[in-house]
Picture 1 (cartoon, helix red, strand yellow):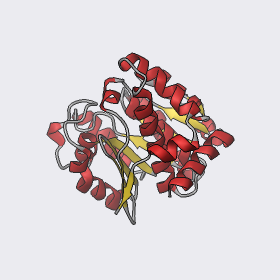
Picture 2 (cartoon, one colour):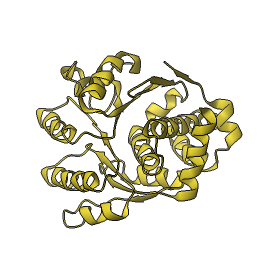
Picture 3 (spheres, one colour):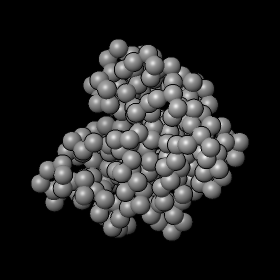
Length: 265
């Protein structure tokens, strides 16, 4: 499988998918740079009058609810409806799930559209599955990713979505298997928006890789390995952020295959 994952990374670099992002203001620059670093092209348009037209030209859609307001929620729904009409994949990042009733209401509405992929940290996934709503700590996770497997399976069973749980161990849940990726580094939690970058990168892979589980695994492994290698030459979170972009851009097949630690069940 490792060789196949690398082929997907090369495909993204060669085909440069156009990714429509309706995302939060905190991370827009970070996620745009991450997409450019892997070879994809970001579009970030929120206006109601153009979101549908943007989906006409993009290969996939990224929905991130980090900084919500009613106007943006309407733009999200318009874009999702167009993506579904065009049979294009979309990914939901439930940032801060469980933090407020409004956030949970919006997520409930968005889930009804059945995302191709849902990606969040353990606390967000657990809150989204309504197993532990009151324990969410904003965008930070108070749980280990392994604790959220049952919640991820519940989401998959309910909505048919591939579920990606980010954490010390990244977990991808699909119809037939659970995949664990044991790469990355704790310093990555000190850089804002890396989870959001993970969502955007998955979005790029969804746009061109037919097997959506493999797309999710390849994208997740790419960022985790980039973070693991970047921390080796980083003095702290500031240099790590820059070095991750360099690793995403420069990572070689040999580095990827030598570093990846993945298991399937």
